[in-house]
Amino acid sequence: MTYITDIFLIAISAALINNFVLYYFVGICPFIGVSRNVDIAFGMGFAVTFVMTIAGSISWAITTLVLVPGAPFTRFIAGFFLDPGQAVQIDLTTLSYIVYIFAIASSVQFVEMYIRKFFPSLYKSFGVFLPLITTNCAILFACLTIMSHVAGVENPADVWGLSKALALSFFGGVGFTIAIVIMAGIREELDFCDVPECLQGAAITLIVAGILAMAFMGFTGVDSGLRVALTGG
Image (tube, rainbow, N blue to C red):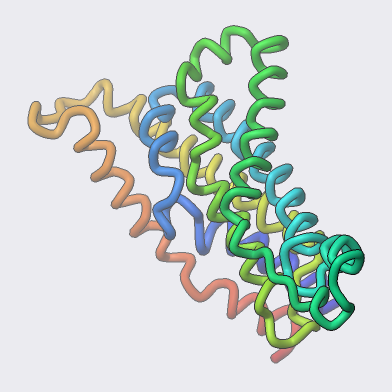
């Protein structure tokens, strides 16, 4: 029950309480650039969710099997050249940024080919922002968050498994989708408003984003309350 509760709280936190865009302010580039139309924003949110889920699972696997000290694959390869005591101490986490970017880029390439083949109109609407998902810091942020719960954790019982990594990745993407669709809906209505010239464009968009961020602050503390309600303490 506790494990299921942890996964549920990770999901709620990533989607609403600690929304990647509105709490950590990562992924702002596509959030601002592709939030002019609800349909396009939903498509971008779906693409980011898919890429984030795939990249998060790949990152967890590589971190667990290769990067962390004592990782089985690294220990096996190093065993041919070093004694077991030295092999178990090899730490490759310094390569995490490079490895995660490659994982994200591969996932984006797959999504780009799929959308270009089956949804050409959506592909044209995304423009340059679809390949720019590769440099979407929200996805890299999810991968690094997963790494922080795998590498350097003092208590082995607190190390995240694949299910928790998938929960953070998928619902982090869901939170991104929620944020960008809400923003797109507001920006569609702003087209009918008399916005002062000095605030038109990115200025009013950033103001609305700030108001949304303050609104999402209302979810603060919900996770701790849910934990008490679900676990009884």
